[in-house]
Image 1 (tube, helix red, strand yellow):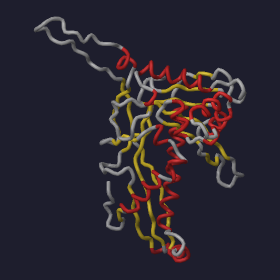
Image 2 (cartoon, rainbow, N blue to C red):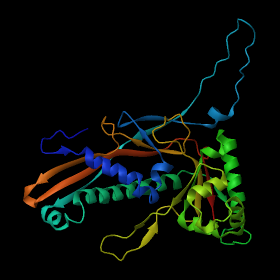
Image 3 (spheres, rainbow, N blue to C red):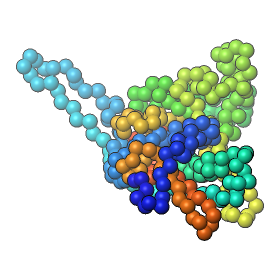
Amino acid sequence: MYPESSSITFRPELAVLGQEYLASSAASKFIGLRAAPIFNAGLQSGEYPILNREYFKKPAETKRAAPGAPYNEINARFGQGTYSCEDYGLTHPVDDRQVAIYSRLFDLEAAAISVIMHQMLLAHEIRVAALYSGAGYTNTNVTTAWSTTATAAPLDDFATGINDICDMCGAVPGDISLIIPRADYIELMRTAQFIAKGQYTYPGIIPAQMAPMQVAGLLGIKECLIAQSAYDSTEEGVAETNAQIWTAGVIYLAVCAPANSGLSTPSAARTIAWNQGEPDNLIVESWREDKNRSNYVRVRNDLDEVLTGETDLFAYKLTNT
């Protein structure tokens, strides 16, 4: 809901900056909104359908018995899950003195939005990674550890997983996303099998320098999402310890729906968004605090991250790479 207090101002122009950050700078850092695409819900909490195998696997008899006879009837059955969107947000002060110091260099309000967006996306990334790791997907070990570069067969590992998903839910390879931690992506690039296929597929391009979209093209899938965001896992005041959000050695092949598509569209996971009836995924507000000689900006949204398919229906988990 837009601000109701006269002292708080809705800032759509700053919301645009937030969306631009999400679409540009953050796109290379965070994959959470592609691994769990947004669905805008009309209610803060409620039920959502969980797609099951029967929906995709059981062929129905479509032949009419005789002229004048009724057509056969089917009734799609779904599982049922519940969601409850939580209120997430952060506030950042924009100090008058700091504005005066830096005004010739950059817009401090815009910089504050970027800092807030980074933190909110970082938190969302952690939640989505935890959602996948806690989903109970079957662990499928690779045939040979990819660190054994001469004999590892990552393309065979991927082919097995892609075929498994396609057989399980009727997807095609072009529906499938590869979610791969940065360390595993580097290992993949070093394997002899990948190098040989890369040189054949893209003559003149060094395989280790292939773009993610080229890797996806080589595999014949929709996209390659490299999970490369890290965070400091220690408490404030303690020596920094960097940790990867997506665990190295664990890779997912997953069906990931387009953002804002209906919940009947197959997807391993979704981010359900509710902004109190407002159409924007981000609400940005500001107000003045004279006692602090500062303007304050706040970004907020209501989200819940959920699994939308039966276990192993829309995702395949590769381990021990």
